[in-house]
Image (tube, rainbow, N blue to C red):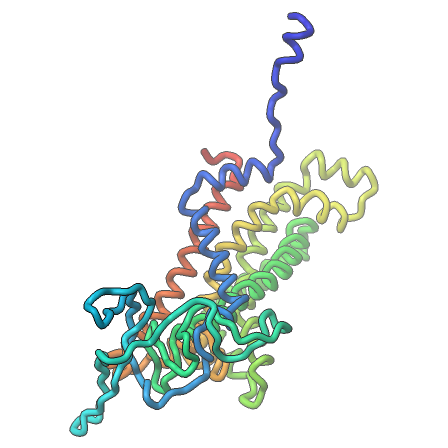
Length: 374
């Protein structure tokens, strides 16, 4: 072979493990779509005030239990034509004097013009940028528009769901981070050292897993003083939902450490003079970090469901904190479900979408992290 022919031969493409994992993940179409959907949900949580068309706590006596309003694209002109105008039909409220039930009917003579980047209630974007701009809503700040309906106080359900996303999704992330620290630490110590340390940690895990989850949550939540501020209660609920979540991860980490601690590269690292902490941090944990990421992704929806269950049962977050669980709690009576089913359907659908997206994302990461998967 001549020198010219040798120069034209392309070198083989060598990809890092992370690049290989990413390429395999992109082939999982459902998981890849779930990644974008999950990112959109977290963006909605970050920019909640910008996306919410109305203040989540703003009440309206003329809009109690108002059903969802549709969006229309064209309006009729005086000459019989049609012009493009994004709008919703204005509504009139009527009260049946016999049953005292409210009903709403479209007002044919009045519309509510809608637009993008409209003015509304004032807030601090990202916590430090004062503004009154909102992504979508009525052009006239005095108009009320309920895309997903309103509740018993005339508050906009869409705005409350958007603001509740911040609490519910952050509880999942923070709870998983707490579980990550506890699970990797105790699981790593248990698998690396073994002996009596392993026995003590495993007996603790078995004891925690033997306790029924709901009674444990109820007992811990009952210990929260009623006079605590909402922020402190929020933090304690995050600790409660993390009490059990770390046990599964700790057992997975322990099993991996038991199989790795006698490997040749671990023995070489010890002979090289590295401390136990350095061996764990530099060699053992990175060797299965992709599996930990996949496990944590699958744990986030469990944390979200745990917070929702606690709040729905009345032992978790309480108003004025807005979360998906507290929104569902307001729809747990029969009258509300009959007269205003959107109070249950809207937050319930959001929970289902978020949990499915996170589960599909976790499945895709787990398959991409498995070197033996095809």
